[in-house]
Image (cartoon, rainbow, N blue to C red; front, side, top):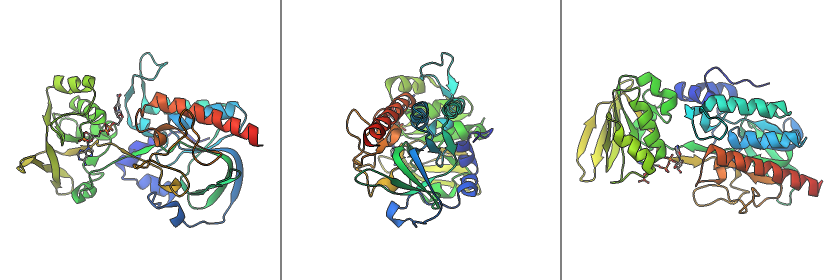
Length: 352
Ligand code: NDP
C-alpha cells in the first residue's frame, strides 16, 4: 500500500527542487512528445481500467471503478495527490462542515479508493500508444513498464506556470515558488511578492499576509481578474500592496532572493526588497504525451464529447482539470472522475 509522506509530496517537490521526485522516478522530461519517447519493450501487464493521476478526479474514478469490480490500477504521477496537496484549508468541498486541509482530503480519498481494491502505485506515464479502434491501449510507465489497458482514464491535471525569466529559474527553490501554502512558512515575518491577478494570486497573497510582514501583489493589468469576494479580501488586508500595471523584469539576489526589479506601463523601473517571490499566473494542462492521439483545444486541454468524458479514441476517457479550463474545482473534478468511471464501465460492458 502506498502511504502519503508526513509532508505532502508536492511540498517536498517545491522545497527540494524536485530532487525527491527524481530519486523516485529518474530524470524524466515530461515535456517530451509521446513519439519522442523510447518505447522500451519491457515488462507488460494487462489491466481493465488504468487511471493516470491522483487528484480528486483520479481518486473518484478509482472509487467508482473499484466498486464496480473493475480492479483499477492508478499511477499517481509526479504530484501525488494532485494540486490540492498544495492547499491548506478547503472550505468548499461538500461534506466537511469545518473545512479540511488539502493533503488530509487527498489522504482520505486514497484510503477510500484502496478500501474497494484500487491498486495505487508510484509512477509517471511517459508515453502512450492508443488504439484508434479501441481495444488494448499501451501506456509506458517511467519509460519502462508497459500497461496494456482496456480503458484509460486520464486525470493528469494541470501544472503551475512560471514567467519564464532566467532569474526566476535561477532562484527556484531558493526564494521563487509557485505554492505559497507550501513554502510561505519559510518567509514568516519577511516581505514577499505574489505575481498574478486571478483567484489563486489573491488567495496566496492573503494567505501570505497572515504570516509575512508585507506582501506586494504584482498585477500586469489595471484591473484584477479575481472574483469580487477575493478582491474585497485583498482590499481589506492592510499589509498587501497591490501594484497594478507592473511586470517583473528581473529577480535579484545572491544565493537567495533579495529583491525584484519591476517595470510599470510607462516603462519606469521600481525595485522592491523581498525575500520570497511567489508565481500564481495559472496552469498548463499535462496533456503533452497524449497529443499525438487525442484532440485538444489551442491551449492543450483535452477535448471531450460534451456531457461525457469520452475523448476521440474509444476506451480513453478524460476527467478533472486536464479537460476543464473553466471550473477547475475539486468538486467538479471529482464529479467528472465519477463520470469517467461510469463511462468506462459502460464501454467495457458493451465491448467485452
Ligand atoms: P487565472 O488564469 O484565473 O489568472 C492568472 C493570472 O495571472 C491573471 O491575472 C493573468 O493576467 C496573470 N498572468 C498570466 N500570465 C502572466 C504573466 N506572464 N505575467 C504576469 N501575469 C500573468 O489563474 P488562477 O490560477 O488564478 O485561477 C484558475 C482558475 O481557478 C480560475 O477559474 C479561478 O477562478 C479558479 N480558482 C478558484 C479559487 C476559489 O474559488 N477559491 C481559488 C483559486 C483559483 P491577466 O488577467 O492579465 O490575463
